[in-house]
Structures are given as C-alpha cells and as structure tokens.
Image (cartoon, rainbow, N blue to C red; front, side, top):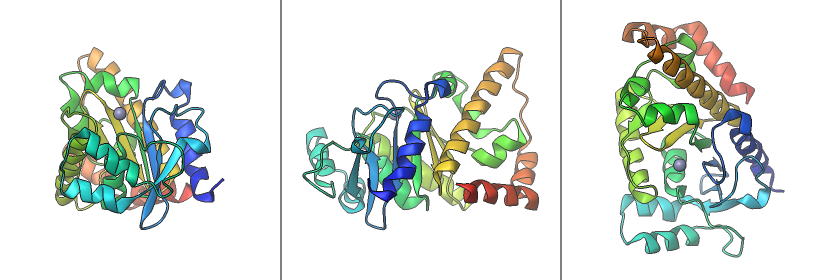
Length: 253
Ligand SMILES: [Zn+2]
C-alpha cells in the first residue's frame, strides 16, 4: 500500500466507528494531501468504518481548483472534470461528490487532513433553529481550545460544487476575520467538517465538537446553554499554556 495512504485509512476507519455515531452506510468522506499537486480522497459509495486502500482515489488539485475558480457546466460535466482529475485514469473508483470542498480546504487552509461526517449529535443541532448559537459561541474552555473561537456556519446548499463554493466563500471570510484557518465547519441540515495538520488533530476536533453538541443538547433541555463570554473565549485561546497544549495536540499526531 502507498505509505501516504496509511494515516488517512486509519483516520477514516476511526471516524466511521459505530460507537462514535458520526456516520453510517456511505456517509462522510475524508482526504489528505499527497504533495503540492495531488491528494487522496475517499471514493464515492465507500463505508468509512471498514474502508480498504482501494476505497481511496488519488486526484490532482489543479483541474478541481480551476473548476471552483470558474464554475461552469452542468453536473454531468462537473463529474467528468472530477473523474479526469484522477492521478491514474485506470485506477478504480470515482472521487466522492464532495471532492471539490476537500481540494479547496487542503489548498486554502494550510492543513494536510480533512474529515467530514454526519455526526448525529451535531446534526440534531444543525437541523434545529439554534445552529448559529452552537457555531458561534463556546461553552467550555477545552471546546474553545480544540474547536477554535468560533466555527464557520454554512447554510444548506446542494451537495457538490454549489456547496463547495459556499464553503470556500465563508471560510475565506472567517480567515480574514481571525487571521487563521478555522478548525470546524458546520453545514446546516447536513454535517460537520474538521481540519488538521495531522489525522489526530482531525479526530480530536471531531470528538470535541461531538461532545460539545451533546453538552449543548443537555444544557438546552435545562433552559441553557450558559455560554462563555467572548472575552473569556479569547483569553483562553491566547493563554500561553493553552497555545502549548494545542501544539501538543498537533505534534502528537
Ligand atoms: Zn456530507
């Protein structure tokens, strides 16, 4: 097996573990950078928890980023571009329909790994009127440290190229606001994306976001949540000991 694929394979299986309740059947997808020109992406229709090396396809960034920069054509034409982006045209598998947001995030956010799931606890909130509260506010210090001061919230958009364009626009706006890439992207009525330099970072952020969702749901049942103030959130993410902890999370992966 290609060495660059092993960490992605393990990360994807963990995201798909039934006990995590992040994804069932063919839900979710994942990717990792191979080099400056190409990346691995989960193939369409694969289950995460028992995925095999053949469940991934290597694709080139350039044709997919070009399609994002100048969106044209109908779905059939976009599929042709994605299929033609395969590094080895003879390799089996069709890139996931979400390949374009993976290309954009790996390219724009300075990360090496991207995980996307439909975690049940998170979707309970993203399918409710309180999605913005969950995305833009924080309840606990560890949540703020791992998930960042706020998550990017993307309204419901048709999966595929339209969704990728909406994600890219909102991520760029967030990067302008905060001067760094987000850790979590929440898609209304759809699911969650976490970004990391390492597979461990993607998994840790997904786990913390899922825990935060369960905390939010319980607190909401009791009339809450009571959120941290914006000042407290900024204080905790800028504390030197917390910056050190975050670095540890990244390097341990
Ligand atoms: Zn999805």
